[in-house]
Length: 91
Image (cartoon, rainbow, N blue to C red):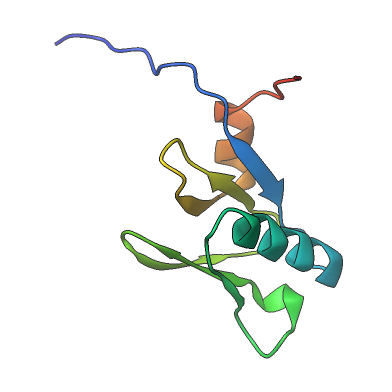
């Protein structure tokens, strides 16, 4: 079996903390890049944010990071996975 290393890539991301301020920041982040997302439950930010993806709608829960991928797609990522996968890239 061969081993492979993931290519280094810089992504954009915003963390959703379940507050109205972070919900608005995430929705603005997605909208600024031509994406669409919505609050999961009548404007209550703690309910989450629904993000349409190629695999169907995904729910971002409080604590999740919202990632803009290399092809411009958006998807949520659990904080543990984000911390294990990404480091802050300055610049």
